[in-house]
Image 1 (cartoon, rainbow, N blue to C red):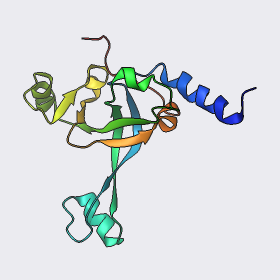
Image 2: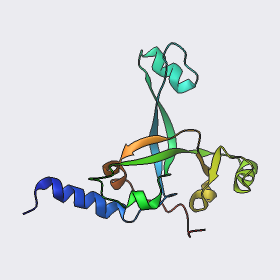
Image 3: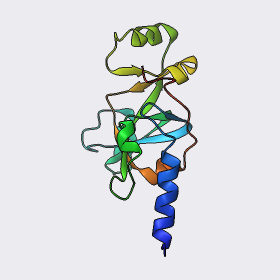
Length: 145
């Protein structure tokens, strides 16, 4: 007989079967980073320093999954985490340069290119798979290429 934990693990695993590397969640989200409140390097870190904390939150227009698809679809019981990067809105000229791989800090994502959004690969955050399972998935890559 299944217990309650097994049921929600199966629900999370089933939801993640649809997700692939490069898929996104759009809308108001927050990227969290550890910072030194005594030596803040970013605006988010400065705000955290004013509050005397060492976790800075940055509001971003979405997040992109950068974990490999083969690891996303593994059971959350054995592999509970997924890596995400924040999305960043860019001007059309910069988007073109990113698409041509001239800006390695960023990744071009075809499924959201019309929104001028790219992944900022300088920043990565770990989230539990149960968090991703609750998100509304936006396909980032339309094919394996």
